[in-house]
Length: 110
Image 1 (cartoon, rainbow, N blue to C red):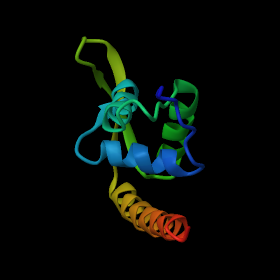
Image 2 (cartoon, rainbow, N blue to C red):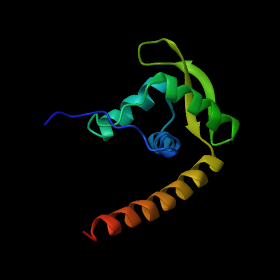
Image 3 (cartoon, rainbow, N blue to C red):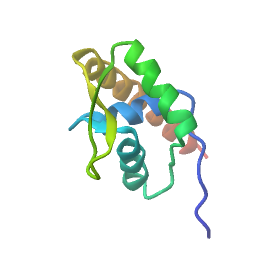
Image 4 (tube, one colour):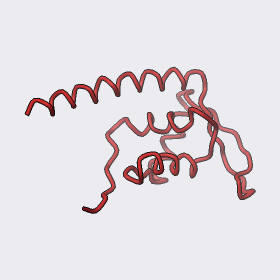
């Protein structure tokens, strides 16, 4: 059986990015990599999806960005969760648990 890349359910990208940023600030490439590693390469976030999501979350006040230096000494924008972003992550996780429990309950019916 080969591994396939799954499309992200609408709305889950924000939750995954917020969760990736929960412990520490990081730049875009590292955010995408954390998601890939955590999901055993099942979920991959392409730049064309990630950066618009980061900009949208920044506008909403969920994350803040500042310029810094990456591990390879290149200039990079680092993103970190704000207080509002942490609250949003808690809300997203609560909704995700309700959703996954409901789907699991349905799937268990047959």
